[in-house]
Image 1: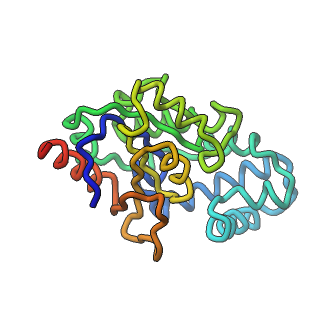
Image 2: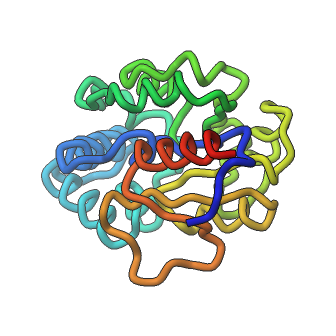
Length: 226
């Protein structure tokens, strides 16, 4: 596994990276997307909308994509609406993660495809708010809905906010496609897979591990050993 002693800052994804998306969370997301789609004007039965959201998550990687691509719902409408239908308290905090954040003296920033309001709620719920000041929170709406897999803008902003060059930063994600641009920028890239590593690891992924605790413990050990 690649050494990490050079790392001075970490850019984190949020959902399924700083915490694990369990089946109950995914179900809650699908229900929330269905409610948001109906609120945006999609004309169908609620149970059918939930079924489509679940299928979209499995087949397209995002619960809302089917409503955007096939039913004309605007991304912005779902983005700002569906998190209001989710209670972040279903997410459990991890004390070990909190301890490692306190023990490892690096800077942190967040780049997420979720809304800033959701990010703030989740960070409070998992006890990590203090390591992510407002000027280091970058949500999808921050840069006019420029996705991580298509633009450098969020990564450039996060690097600037931490006052670090790319080669001192690690980007942590649960979607390997979102690591291609950070890799090209010169960052160390880490994939969180929760025990389900891809059959083939792309060349732009430097390391992969089961969860954020394992990764932080690896970073802590690398820093200690110099």
